[in-house]
Picture 1 (spheres, rainbow, N blue to C red):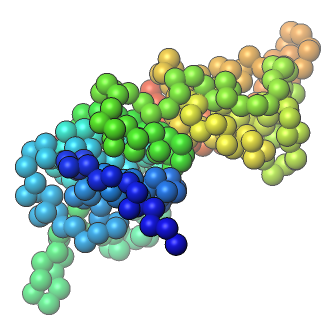
Picture 2 (picture 1 turned 180 degrees about the vertical axis):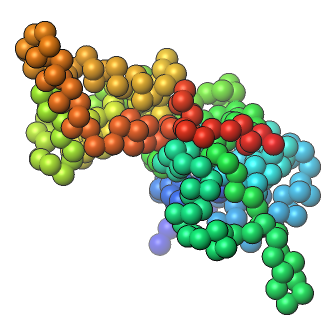
Length: 332
């Protein structure tokens, strides 16, 4: 077998990189390995100083690095606990460039939907009676244990520290991850504030034919089998493509599944869900007029099973309403 890594020149000065996993599922860490052979270039051209998922790195090691010593950290996960916040601030100090990697770090992700409930409501659901709730301090056999506080609200990474780059997706798709690695290894990182994805919406890269037909019923994916060539919205399936940033090559619509909005809003949209609701409102109709039309449209919209979960599945932590119990405690 040919040793492919032997053919790759190793630069004299390797880029120093880090990966950190906060409040998230772990899928973003796995996505880093989906670049296939390019991972060999990363191994040859970069020195990994921080990656708790893959190496036994201690927080003490991170604290001992000089400020700005790490070139780039890919930070995945939202800020949900005191520990998440503390490490985000520490990582920010130790790295030149910090990237919010994946939906949870970028827009709060699916777990941002927890902001619809108070911390007490969450604990009561998960742990039951209050006496079962976790305590910040505990002692066992003479050892003292401190648990990180569960913050009142979940926020994306840039709510607690400055972020240089955004890498959207749940998880970021292979092509975008490859672009990040290529920019790092070439030393050609974009200007700070850049998003590693298209500035246009997903519809621009979707191959389906869209006629902007009026929607007379709303379907969930399991309630039918969409025509693979026609726009999903035209068929009554709520596809978030019009309000979602492109860059994934429309992988879900190509698989006959509606886009759920994981890449977040396009560059010119402030509130992803509101933009999509506005699009939907312009498409719902029956051809009737007057009060009959309004009643018919209300009946169609009533078919939406979960408004927040549909239109704010990945962005509820960054939407204008910020959830029922948004409190600005993530910044300390």
